[in-house]
Length: 198
Image (cartoon, helix red, strand yellow):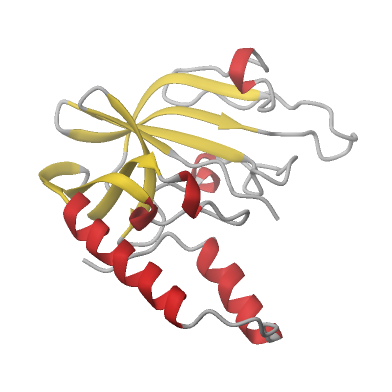
């Protein structure tokens, strides 16, 4: 397994990783008729979403997705227009996605919290899933109601406290024993789960 490509969120001039979602999924490409296909271990979902705020409203700004014709081996299928935007093919830094929707401004009606993270701490890297918010130096929580931004909070200090407790707990419980199959399964599931409670 490989650490996964994060969804991103452009907020106050910074590109943050989306590291926590309090209420289900933030975006489902299936609702737009898309069937993403994973083509590399760093993106099992087959897509990367980039979100932003437009006039206080949560929007899907950019979508990178892999779509293939079902009857042909890995032949690119051009996706449908979304919000009046047609996709471009592979190019530049996103050449491993075969459909790139830029400037979508697609409104989302999400209600709940999001954790945006920046400044990943390299010593905490694990080669699996999505990295949780406590592994970052800066964490901002955004609260939405029906897609409208209600509030933002700096949670960096709280994440630093959590990080310290987790590191201390790991140091105290360090053992050279083998993990059970259930422990490995739980670890993998947690690695791909970005939910958190508010």
